[in-house]
Length: 108
Image 1 (spheres, rainbow, N blue to C red):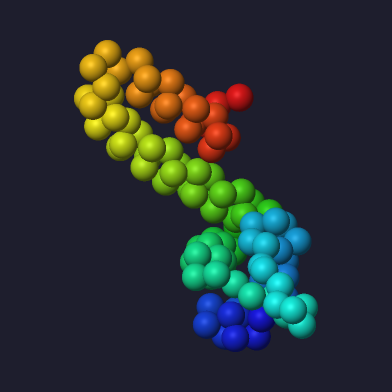
Image 2: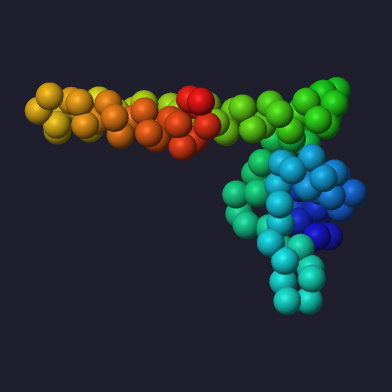
């Protein structure tokens, strides 16, 4: 954890706080040490930026989650026209698109 905190120029306490807020959940080694993937430090760095700007940590976590969901929705939407074109009527593509959005949590 210390190495990840040093890389992000933050403290282990901040990373623990992100874990408590469920923004990042580190994997654990056999010895119980926290291990972070390459993606998680990027999320932690964005949260750190927001907190440094005065955003409360809970709000920063929510903002980062929403930004991540938006990025995923944009990726899905960018793929949608190509899928619709490859399907003659486009119905199957629309169904796949709605399923992807529902799976991502964008539709109830």
